[in-house]
Image (cartoon, rainbow, N blue to C red; front, side, top):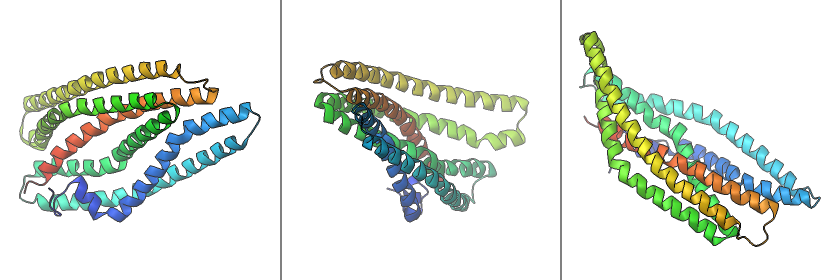
Amino acid sequence: MNSPQDISLSTIVVGHKRKISVTWLMVIVENLLMALLPLFIGYSIDSLMAGQYHDLIVLAAVITTLVFVAVIRRFYDTRIYGEIRVRIGLKTDDFLREHTVTTRNARLTMSRELVDFLENDLPSLLTAIIQLVVTVGVLASFSYLLALSASVAGIIMLAIYALFHRAFIELNAALNTQMERQVNVLSFLSHNGLYAHLQKLKTREIKLSDTEAMLYGLVFIVLFGFVLTNLMLTTQLNAPTAGQLFSVVTYSLEFVEAAIMLPVTLQTLSRLSEISQRLNVR
């Protein structure tokens, strides 16, 4: 468990909980509206085919609200996370006073990755989670089999990632260790020494990329099976309207898009877990 004095995602969030909670609230509202768009579009299609415009007006109001919240959040995020980066950078340097300049330089850069995750990657994770939950709920409103298919695919994907989690931590640790040597390499070693260093970086990055590719391959197989299953189940719906067919197909595809975000974000969390351990070594 992290000490309050440690540098980690959890301590950053707790230390700035009021400011961060505001942006999280806006992220949730933004993504709920985004996730519900296909449903409102489906309603609008059926409404327009019946010569009515009420649902189209509701859709326009939802889109306007979505744009407003998205713009305000980005203005707000840039300012609060910029302030947090400054504070975490100073705290990191205080921790590392006894370390070499090369280590301090590398870990100062790494500390910014924690805040970068909160600003850039966490909204994507919340987007994926909200999209997955909304998708399962909407699909369940059409058929429990459609929702069951999505749920099974999601569970299998999480199980696949769990098998790769330890490998990602070890590979990121090797890459970060090599990065910490870079300033010394540039300061004291010859051209041949730099070449060897860059070759080691390349080797570690290739291993990490290969592991990601294997994870993606397995995830795509699961998602391919999910899409085929839902296409077959859609044909079994009882006299579906054009709007319902649009919603089912769109939500199935958005489930795939959201599911693809998860491996990226979870791999980043594995990397940040290793970075947090590194930053808190006194």
